[in-house]
Length: 176
Image 1 (tube, rainbow, N blue to C red):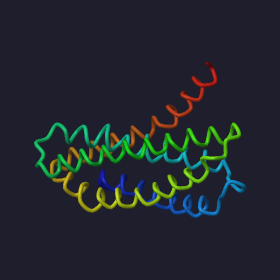
Image 2: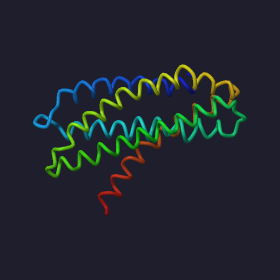
Image 3: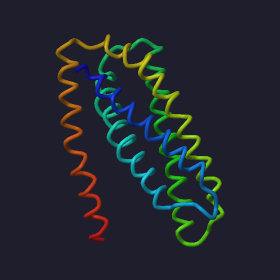
Image 4: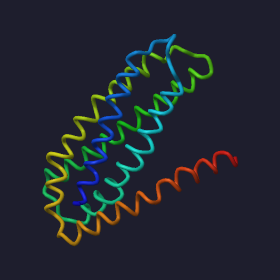
């Protein structure tokens, strides 16, 4: 498997989950809103899409690309992708804040949560297409076969640490 293949497999799961999340969220209103389902959607986006997937992109791929002499168009696209990752993180934090308010009795943010989940479900396919069709193929050109093989190994190592990171942070939260 190519290094980008693993990232593209993750893209397919992100797309599928967000299609279903959008379908579920669009059935909700203030009376049928399910904060636990929204917690699950947020957990998926934060842990899988952001920390695991974007983590591999930013911590490994983009870091390694930063050591190369990139063409301006590739530098600009990488910068745009990082900005898009940050934008998605901001939107997810908005959901978390509004969902927390809901759990405390303030139902006024339900409509906004639905809008943000819909936004994410429209944002990610465009972002993913940009990566799959343009950025990843271009990025591969900067690396040797050996470097790409090492990157794939680094991705697997990164993934192996994720479950431990997630539950270590749960422990830290419970301990405090």
